[in-house]
Length: 222
Image (tube, rainbow, N blue to C red; front, side, top):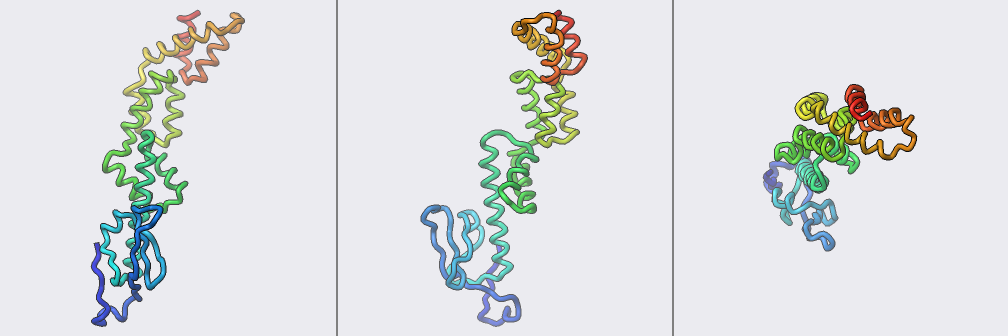
């Protein structure tokens, strides 16, 4: 990715000082990493991918700029590894992944590069993520539209994505069906029937159903 300079001809004598790679060793505890020694002292370590990309060899010289480039890329490789490990657990939004990398103290510019890498390969896709979330919250959690909207916002999804996915996937008939089934189930647990309407209303409201859906469900039930 960059060429080494040969200082023996004096062409770079007036430029920045360079350091000599005096030793490269494989780490004992992490055999997938190489320790790089400059001028007889340990300087930094790199993963196999970084080592493959940059022709670091014993006896070669590195300028401060070249060292910075190598370390910057190594930071990206670290962020990429963290991101992929985080995403293998379950799908995440761009916002969630950004927060995670910030907590790992990854520099902002490296986070942006990691996000771009993941988006290009569709490891993160907020539209797809929102669609799957809504489907599960309707069918598995039986949440109402208000709670679904809140959950999407908490995951940092954009207003446009939230608007589109709710319009495409939330149907009044499904909301009413879920609200009615939940209300009927709740009804069986209420001993004081005089307070049934109030308790069921509050229960459905907590589940995120709209005012109109709750009223219709109560009307059908009671």
